[in-house]
Length: 474
Image 1 (tube, rainbow, N blue to C red):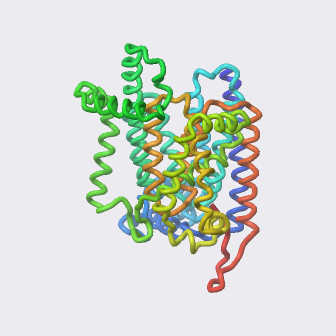
Image 2 (image 1 turned 180 degrees about the vertical axis):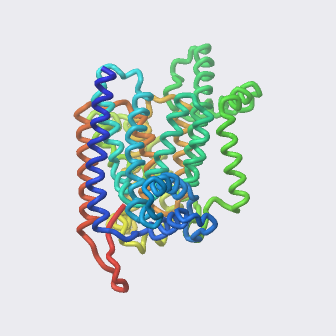
Image 3 (image 1 turned 120 degrees about the horizontal axis):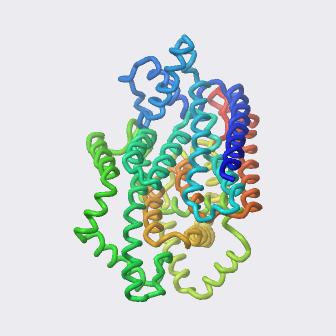
């Protein structure tokens, strides 16, 4: 059976690569010159191709990981084929690097699904394969396989890092984590998440032992207590656990490779006087709490084929009926956060080439009350998100939510690309959906991808003060 599954997956990878190459050819023919952020990335990579490693464009805000990997892959081609670096380091060739990352992401997603859903191995061959295919075509990620952006490579190294963590190869995981940070600084959050899963496992075990002794079945380690007494109990346990010398030694024994990476990153921040490289004026951190609500809504839309059903909606209504005061308080908190902590980046209001511009203009900015009227949607989307983790352990869920907050809230700009990794992590840890649901999910992603690429290629426009062709994109 495993051999047969291997054949199916190999055929799937080949087909996926072929179709992606055909789409890549079409996109590149239509947009030969660097577009959007490529006007910074492509020239910088070409400088590296010519050995000019000391030259750096001050407008680039991310580390040089993408350029280093590109040179590492392209230079051998130059030597073997006896070609000029100028020919091989063309815009098209640099973009092609991301198609290779796309293949890698498909394979890593498949391996992660097999590892995370090991207990569901029986009769799940088609579901595992289709899940991996569906997630590899996740629209926001898939679109950037055809442009020279950092998203495909950044996702590849984070997925690889997490896979090595799950296989207890912590030194390799930490090294891959360094590679991911070289693509994007905020990936340090997901390296920390990999380390925190190890801490969470030990805390869950200690929690389980403690409450088994007390025979407190209501405090199951797989449930996040919502009552004040439950929250207090978890906080006291966490404080006691993290102040225990024995526990700290046990944690450091396992997580020291990640600690080294964290200390190295801290050294970089001190030396750089901040996280951002280059243009800092447009990349300022703030407490933009509604970013979390946008992410919940984003997740609800892209996961509804596998996460929503009539019974789940009914269960939400029953939960509202049982705990009206809690949800009334939660809605009040959401309203307060929307009122006091909504920040709008000038890029969001000015750049009409991005889809978030139209989401903001035609939905949230339609009337000043709309952002408050959306709070019930945020509450349901948040409930659906948390409810999907009901089978995950308590402290794992808390670690993930903490990293999700760190990855979304400080971002002032509403940019769907920032949601790629947290969404994939969320979706990977959901129970394997049924085959019909996975089919609907794949069809949804395919339809969105087809529409996105069609709009990018065909629906061009021009700005009044520029002759350059403009295109719509994520």
